[in-house]
Image (tube, rainbow, N blue to C red):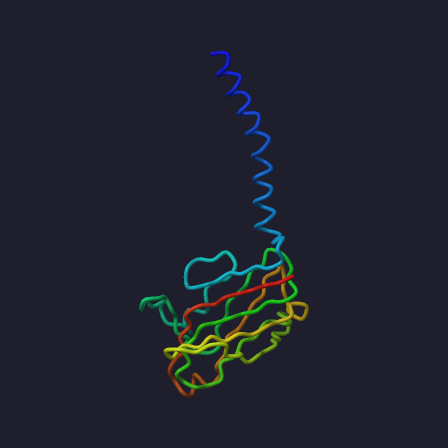
Length: 177
C-alpha cells in the first residue's frame, strides 16, 4: 500500500511539473509560429484565421456539389485574415470559376480611414474543369493591419452590368515572416 502511494505521489509531482511545460509549448507554437510560416485554408468551414465571405446579400448560399462553394453575385465582397503575429509577406490563393470572363481582382486595405486599397490581378497558377487557381502576393508592410487583421476585397466591377456570378471554392493563405 505504501509503495503504491509513493508511486502515485511521484506520478502527480511529474504531472504537475510537465503539464505547464506542455501547455506553454503548445501555446508558443500555435501563437508565435516558430517555423516562420503559417498556412491555412478556408473552404466554407469555420476557420480561426480566415473569416467567411461577406456581405451576405452579394453572395449566394453555400452550395454542396461534391465540395462546398459560394457564388459572388455582386461587387465587391470581403474577407479577413487574422494573423497571430506580424508577418512580412502574405500569399492568397483562390480556387474560382469565372464564366463571365471578366476581370477578377483582389485588393487589401492600405488605409481603413480613407478606404484605400491596393489591387492586384491574380496570376493563374493552374486550370482544370472550368476552375482556375489564382495567386497574389502582398508585402504586409504596406497594408493596414490593426491587431494583425488584414481585410481583403474581391472585385469584379462588371458583374452588375453583365450579370452572372463567380464561384469560389477555396481560399488558401500562406503567411511568412
